[in-house]
Length: 504
Image 1 (spheres, rainbow, N blue to C red):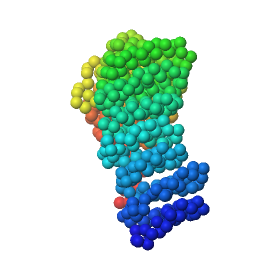
Image 2: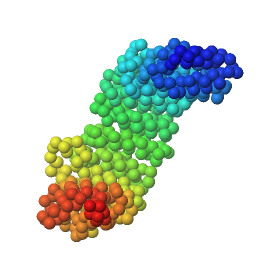
Image 3: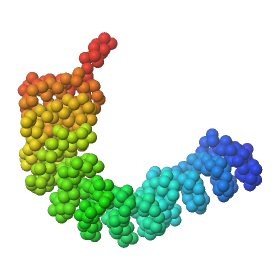
Image 4: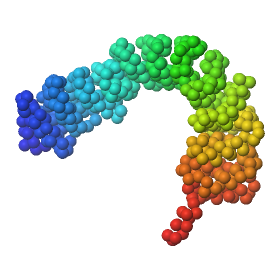
């Protein structure tokens, strides 16, 4: 800024002392700074300071003035490099964070969030520990936007900040269920990072409190806690802790009591999702040690409750996505065999939403390439044989591939796409490719570009055709046609070719 502008800034800030001139002066400052580059604005702001601007926030009953003051402060802050505002005006930022008005706290926490999400090392520990403690307490803020930012910041602090922050954050546990959930979210987020931080959270009693809170009557609150615990449970050090501390056993006991709970219809999906997350990673151990979790799933799969059945289908499919999951499921014997047969019935006879979920469930059970091992290892021969039998259970008369062919031709896009997803899973196996080759018209349907116009359908069919080009189940003539289709791409049409030729 020029010396003249420096003087103007000083004059405007002096006018802020006079109530009648305050709004005009704030607008003058705003207009003065708006188009000045940072290289000109920052030296003057540093020289004259922002204290007089902050004093305008003391009159909390004047909404327009408060809003305008926040605009001016935000404009000042934007001129500084990331982190410099907090370094220069630490005490002012602390004042703003504790202000009674939401818009003021939001202004300050946005500035802290910008630093922490860019480079936390800009605000090192222990120099800024009081700032981090203040933010940690704000996870219980009454303003949702402020509380969410506080959760984000507190979940991404340097590890050395947590001994102090966790101690002071306990204030959130004294608030309402929303405040407690925010605190629990931070605990779950940081505990997944390392065993040391997890132990720190355990020492403060957060996890014991979380499990105890599962016995409240607030259904949504319980579901949130289960979801957060499942984030921890999928980490090796997390599941070890939950087992060692008896938390998983307590949750298993709560599941056994669900049948006596008047809210079981609302609670069951949440407990199933929790179970599915853990069993996806540790199927064998969970099936063996916590039969109540397994019983919950199979009972849900036999239910006609439309709030429970879709989640049960998703959960079974998620568990069966991995090779170990498939082998653990088949080891259950007749109970699982009956379940697979029931899924076939659901696919053929259910309403659209349930049919689609059941098709995706079957796809995950038969698919082998979603397991990370698929990139480096050959598929276990047992899985090849098992999945063939599971697919055959879809229908005896007509055959399973004929049924799937009809599903893929269904005019409803959701059903059609779910059918193509299952077909792609089936075609990952030699036996599946051979079945496709045996069904009259199936290859022709896949190669017929006039059948589907939906982008998703074209892409799904293209992926399947591309997979089949590597198959030994077809003669050379079919393989050539499949390869030509792939070379032309998923969206080729005769019209496109004709236009291209005319342009030449």
